[in-house]
Image (tube, rainbow, N blue to C red; front, side, top):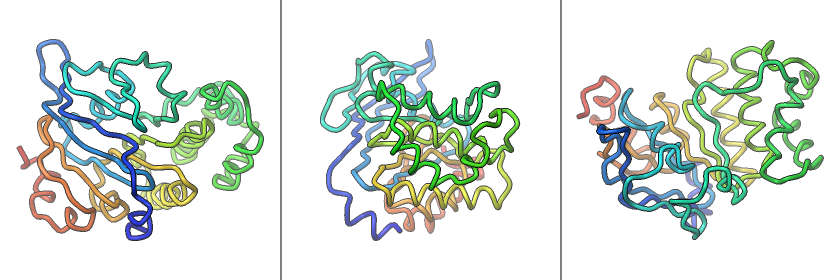
Length: 246
């Protein structure tokens, strides 16, 4: 997968340059630079508290960067209002899924089309091919789904907006091993269908096996970067997941 998608990775779709973020007096990100190119799976790994989710959500202005810049498909989005950013072709699946449990599966997916300002039946047909279980459950309340099915729904809802770039925050969190394998297989399929993926994960083994390239974040800074397989074999990466990478 990595070799195939690398061949199509030609242009930066996301570029973060010297980005710093704060929560009050606390420096969470410190001078972070990274790129995600079209057709890639790029993963960001690191220990708890390293700043991974903050980095991901800063793309949407949550929080606003204190310094540095964020470019998406050649457009500076650093200071754009958060609600404008999805219209450019970005979508995010936040940690914890954040589906609407009292709404049906189909109603949740329809919310994902808001960035398009219209519902597209063609997009839904493709999504139900990718997630056949959601077709079976389409009239079921989302809160009654299993954890893995809820994660699929969160991803399908994001894809309903037909994004160029999909940001995934800890999609394997709290899932059984078989469902984790299924979710990572789906990520491969998503990229093969034409959507670039930026993946934040603590499951280093799975994420780096899947990724074309990866970054290791520690204490708000990029500590290592390289091809997925190179990072997977790097002893410092193993130390990071034991909490030993400062």
